[in-house]
Length: 250
Image (cartoon, rainbow, N blue to C red; front, side, top):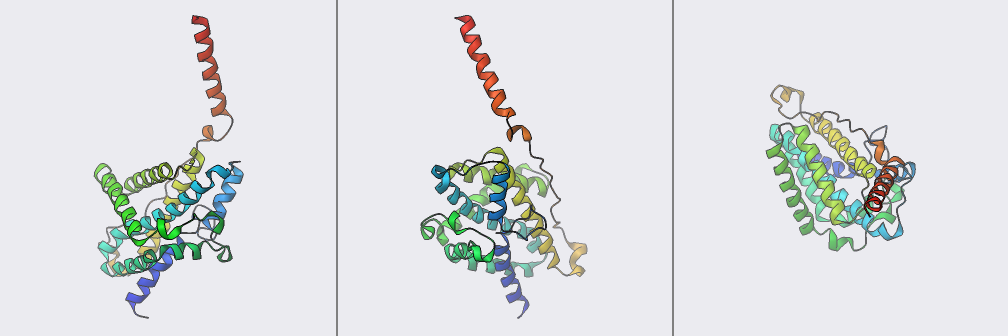
């Protein structure tokens, strides 16, 4: 196998690795869907039947977004070391038949995904043309972040925040604060994994002229105010106070 074929296959591998968790330890050892289910259980968040179709669509769209992140992170490293451009060929192969790829990676037999969380009508939602349209949308978000932010870490954080916000709004998925925190931290951790991986594919002799750098670990502390009884209690007290004020004026 020559270097071009090796890097093309590496692109396919990177797409497969998008279905693993990088927030759980050891990184990349557990399926993302499994870790997500455990997270919901820990936070006592129930996936209601009425929301299930929306969750399924969001999770599939999140996979598309995660593969876009793989492209986004590769850009700077490929600029420094052009042979890495062959990785994009692997990405394109996956995206040409993304519905089948999604079903394959969601097979519980692989210990990665969960077929029960796949949306219906995959070929309609994830045709090659619609995947391309998603990329163009995310490209606009990335361009906006790059114009506003100074550091690569801040640009990535902005892109992730806007991307997740867009998907949860479009898919009507109830991304409560702890769930949004989960996906933002997972995406950052995946980007950090990718940057280390891409750097490892570049010969050390090129390191002195390397501009791209692995992303720094970003600590995003979860705000427990939104995850326990206090927020509903504060809202209740606030509403009760308003009612008392209205009655007093009456």
